[in-house]
Image (cartoon, rainbow, N blue to C red):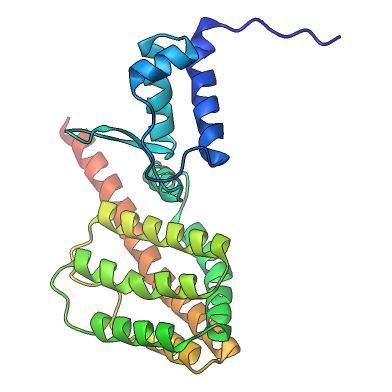
Length: 250
């Protein structure tokens, strides 16, 4: 007969975390629902306030809940997303555990297929949305932040049109990582993404030409990938130069 291991006191919060997580995953709590107050959770789990707070903190760090302050404060279930994955990727990038070429290798593999599927599922409503995005992104930019925000919309919408939620989540995660990397590096420019780079992709998608859309997206991913790779190279060199200068002065 299997023998169970005694539960260590240090694992109490982890068990609370796991039970709440399972309730969320099974739909007992939906996005937007407020979890019971700390005191009620303490009574239900028969554990200390410290264990409850540690469990809620772990759930917040893993993207299951968020804490609000004020009159409507409390712990609320949030929509699961790839945002935490994006945050992990940016940390890995800054620690030089992942590189821009690796990220764009993935984009070259995934995004052409997203464009292909979008061309097969295009509708009048999504056509109108894509045309609006093209018009907006080809207007003059005021800042790098605005440029990034505007230029990512085409990728988001194509991912939504493609009809595969896993691909959509991956693309949105990759775009968030790209955005965070650019913000972290903070290049001295208003725009890294010339206007018009998305036009061949969007026009092929709207025309319902899957192969042309996929090829246009592949070319775009490669071209912009080169821009990002050069940005990363300059950033790494700047960091090393600053480090060497600091050491020589010290």
